[in-house]
Image 1 (tube, rainbow, N blue to C red):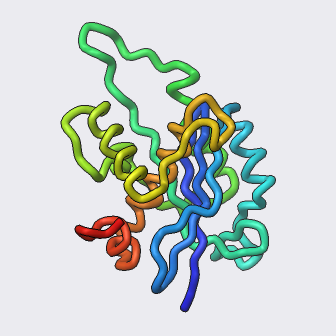
Image 2 (tube, rainbow, N blue to C red):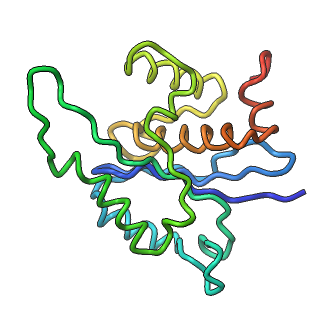
Length: 188
């Protein structure tokens, strides 16, 4: 039975990271969840600390001494301005692009499994607040919900986003143990 290691990142002014495992017979399991401010420069420092890199073979990634099998990253998606206003690109709204640049600069782009922001809301909902509410209820149901105090921040929104993107990626991969554990009726 093999176990695999993944890293999911929600880049921005505040970054969320979810280190997770899954296996041939094992569902998604979060190993480490981080959320930290500081934008792209701090993302680079954390990736250095975790030693995320392309290996000498140039065809694999590693994190520390382990092979990294998946790198899931939320893709920056420009959002149109609200009705009656003009779109204004601010540092905060552009920071996810700088975070993507950190990953590209480390030659990791070819390994990235990009996730659109909407893919983390696989539980449905009519509006963004409703989608977020349903996603948090899903995490609570499965004992995966985070609070700000758990990640040493005011909230855990970005760590939650990284966690949801990891689950959504495994779901898109049709990973049977994760689907069985988290999505089959009557499972907890």
